[in-house]
Image (tube, rainbow, N blue to C red; front, side):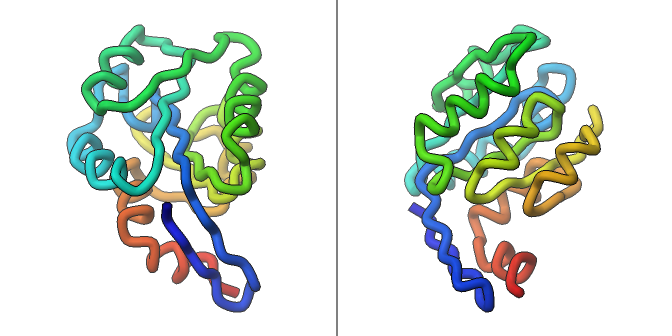
Amino acid sequence: MLQISLPGRDKTLEIKNLLLDLNGTLAVNGVLIPGVKERIDALKSKISIYLLTADTFGSGKRVAEELGIEVFKVGEIGGRQDKLDFLKSLGSDKTAAIGNGYNDVLMLKEAALSIAVIEGEGCAVEVLLNADIAVNNINDALDLLINPVRIVATLRS
């Protein structure tokens, strides 16, 4: 578990789970971004990690196996609700989420901690409006969780 105390906000996050979008977040054109595997390996001993994807490029199962995490396929239509339902099943108050696409919006809005990434495939504007933090790439997002004092610096009051 990751415990993140946010000064001035009377809030301590207790993150037990991490939900990750695939395309545009962990991968571009279905190909895993370099550096992601090492960061996921560093986090797996602290939190449970899940891959949620509509699997546009058909690489979800392979990427999940490479990362050693579980994959959950969401609908090509209605994926927003599928991701939200999965989040709620784990407990939104103890789950962080990282994404970039329109189907990530509800999950990001409801998660205890949400991070928007702007990779090569872009980021839906509604994602930016519903995330706690926005970063330039997935490695920066994962580094926030590896070194949570960075989150404190961004979210303190």
